[in-house]
Image 1: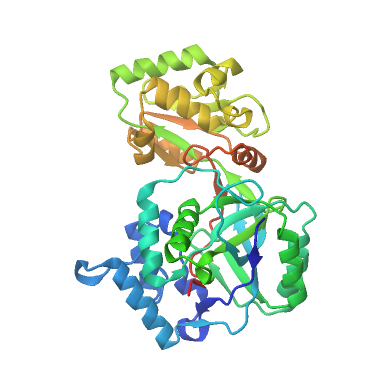
Image 2 (image 1 turned 90 degrees about the vertical axis):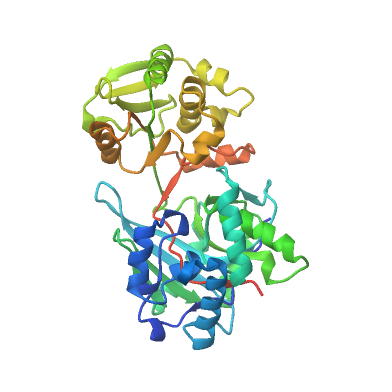
Length: 422
């Protein structure tokens, strides 16, 4: 059972930093060096100074994070609440087609558990490198700096109904608008009745991690490393109902690179053997019907430059290349593409895929097409978004999806709140 509790949050004193706009950042794994420099230029207190630490003179970055965070707390830049609270949150954002949506949820702390039925489920694979980095950072700061994004079943919307009065009647603690125009607003809710309602509601619900698998597994290692009971047994989460009308999953498209003559022949043979092909216009390359049970992709390569729709000819092909997998997994577009094309036809290993050796990822269909047309990629597979229920079914089967199978949009910013672990 999920144990969801309020937290005595550490947070920025907005009188000292001006606004959340200046100090928040996207999650660490989407921030490159140029973006980090831009964020750091907004404020000397931007969260990248501790979440993506860079020490002057090439010194230990984790020690830099530790001393910086301690200095901020001593100087009153970051302060701690006296009483525990849940934090209602909304994110107003724009879809690729211009539609405006609002996603609703709340920030809290959740007891760290082993993965399993009735508790917490993952849905994507993790890699050791990011976990080691996040573990060293957690040891240094003794805090969760960035919330894990998780989902829970709540078809009636009861959790948000309990917290909505806090957002409707109170002045928000703060809001932050990122470079993509997403505005995240948070409200502190210390109402004991509302907190009790949310705790009781979540006590028998299973959580599905949407984003932050590496951070969750780091929290689990850290909790066991410290041992015993205490604040370190909990981690910071943003929770959102699976039925929230603003919950949005976007696709991530695949680019192939390094396709030599031999691989090109193998790729062509695999496509001809397994897929029916239909010519389409370039602006219709990305398949849009997520509920169509047939696996399909948009496809464009730099050799023939003919935009095509590929539809799996026979479901038995998925059974052959994904033996022993659940029905939910065999119906994943990303799983079939990985097994049939990346591994079988092109000979990639899981390590190759994890290191992005020969495969790259882009969010926008137009960027995938442009990469092929410019020659920076040899071929592009354009995918559909994976429905939330399909991700949940794979997780309930005890399986993890291939990398970049889901892109929950937008990301939850880092720096809204911190969860102290001591």
